[in-house]
Amino acid sequence: MKALGNTVQNFELHVSWDVPVKDIISFFDLKPNAKALTLE
Image (cartoon, rainbow, N blue to C red; front, side, top):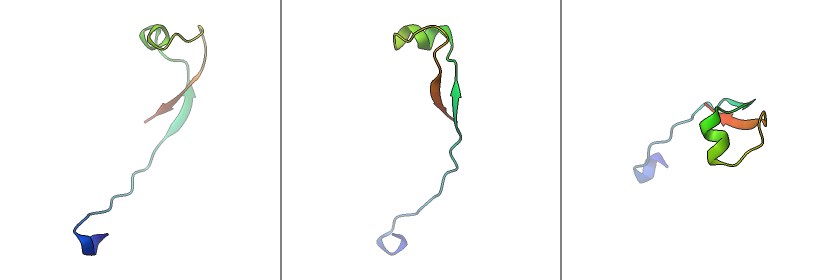
């Protein structure tokens, strides 16, 4: 990739199950206290 002029970066992702805030629950029409995957 570098030979083609593209820089490569590795990113460390943190994935966890969390209960979203009320705004997110209503936006995605989730059940109350439902857990959703969260990327940090």
